[in-house]
Structures are given as C-alpha cells and as structure tokens.
Image (tube, rainbow, N blue to C red; front, side, top):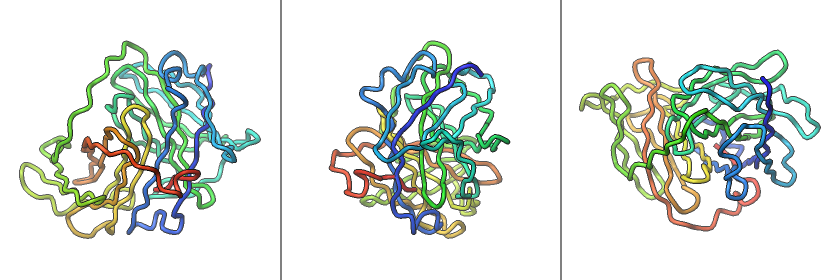
Length: 287
C-alpha cells in the first residue's frame, strides 16, 4: 500500500472500575473532527490533518485509506505510542482485543468487524464498502486496563450522494422479518425484538452481552459506545443508560444476535444542547 495516514485524536478514560463488567454501562464520547472537518472528507487519506489532546500521544497509522465500492479490500492499521513504536499488547474486552466500527459520513453503511493482529503488531481486516463517499472508522480497544478509541477517515472512490437522515421513530427493521421497538425513560433506552410480529424471548449473547449500542452524532460523527445494563442472558429487554452529548441528531445502532446471526437496527434521536459532564471535558471516554 502506497499511502499512509496518521490521525491523532483524543483518547478518553472514565469509570474504569465498571468497564466491561457486563452488568453496567458507562458512556463514551469521541469528537474526532478538526475544525470544520472539510479537509478530511475528500482526496487521498495521506492528506488528512492531525488532531490531538495534550498528554495523549497515542496515534492511529492507517496504511491505505482508499477503497473501491463493493470490493473487499484489506484495511490495515497500527496503534503507535509517542515514540512511534507499535503498540502490541492489548487487553481482551468483550471477547475481542480490537473492535473496528465503520460508517459513511451520512451515517449509512454501518459495520462492526474484528481485525486480526499481524506479526508486526498491527491489525488487518477485510472490508467491503458498498457505496462511494467519505467514511470514518473507529478502532476501539483497551490497553493496560485503559479504554481508548482512535478514529481515521477513509475514502471510497466515486461520487458521494448523501442520504438524508431518517426522522425519529419508535421501531426499526433489522431484516428478515425482525423488528426492534424502543421505549425511553429519561436516559434509559429499552429495546425489544420481534420476528414476524412475534416476541423474541431467546436472544443470544453477542460479544459477552445481550447487545451493543453505538451512537454517532450527525455532522462531526462524535462517537459513543454503550454497553447494556442487563446480564447477557437475563430477560427479554436490552436496556442501556444513554446520555447523548451535544445538540442535534444522532443515529443509534443497536446490534443483537438471534439464531446465530448478528443483526443491526438503527434509530434516529435528537438531543438538546447541554454542558458536558466534568469528567468528559478532558478525558471523556468509556464504554
């Protein structure tokens, strides 16, 4: 691969004692855009700017950020420290040492995949992006007990025709007759699954939990990963405590597993503007 991208963003840590405990969720927010973000949306990945948070030297190095629509290609990257050395030792969190989440900038084409670690300490995963346009991917991992998320932009060749964000709704399709309904109570979201109109009461654990929820903010693609409140095999509902950060629309992606297949349901929500909690101002990542 001929071009390389170095993207440095804020890494955040909060609530580490509760992290990955399985029974409780801790919210996380990553705001990876720099300025108005326009320079990061087109052209080759090698031209992207760097952003950093003081005292946060970890960087994400992408070997090639250019893809062709519909073609499975290898996304290869490394996590490096402040001296440029490849970080090799990662904790297993939710059954994997590395989680990669990718989405187009209009919040379509959501993917959650798990790369393999290469002999040189980097990571590689084969992915196919069906539609052209600017994408962002997030490397979500834990090192020495500290959760971290790094993000970088990818370019999928072709004309970009953004899809308008759907309006808020209480139900969302998940394919093959599956439908997910959501009820909100303050910051709590309770999701229930049905298939062909019948309740699904035997959801299977997915990555050690009943489900996983990722929220992305429209525009700057601020990232928030939340884990469920309930034990992996308890009850029918999948419940999360979610505090959306910043005003505007968010797209919430719920993933769950049934009959051996992982499914995704996406919801749109709007959040009012409010000041961030103190612990998120300088080191606001968690899961």
